[in-house]
Amino acid sequence: MATSISATGLHKPLSSSFHGGWGTSICGDNSIVLIKSVPDVVRVAKPVRFRPMMKNINEGKGLFAPVVVLARNIIGKKRFNQLRGKAIALHSQIITEFCKSIGADAKQRQGLIRLAKKNGEKLGFLA
Image (cartoon, rainbow, N blue to C red; front, side, top):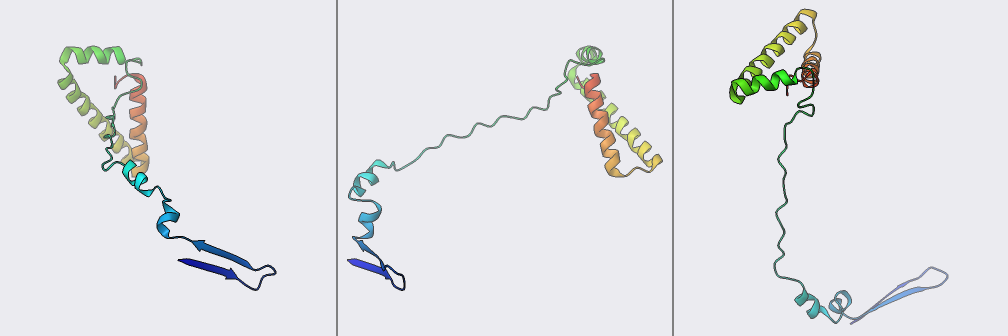
């Protein structure tokens, strides 16, 4: 099976011819060897996922870190986290009331709460 294509209207006529079938032009004569060399099943290893750790980068640092660590060791981790959660909630309420009194919007309030968290990390309250 032979097909020829030619272009006219140019100074030099272009012509191209294609000889052979699609099977030999794509795979060549070694198509059976190629098919046998490809495995039937390809196994892919499961990707390793690391758990994100919520950890303070300033842990153990800061002015109040030794006091916080000592309190946590004395009263226990569970009770300490409960008290710290209550203190953080109370502080957020105080910031909210302050923002209401000066007329700050929710975006400014959220910014103040984030700033308080960063300051608490630097001072060692979240150690």
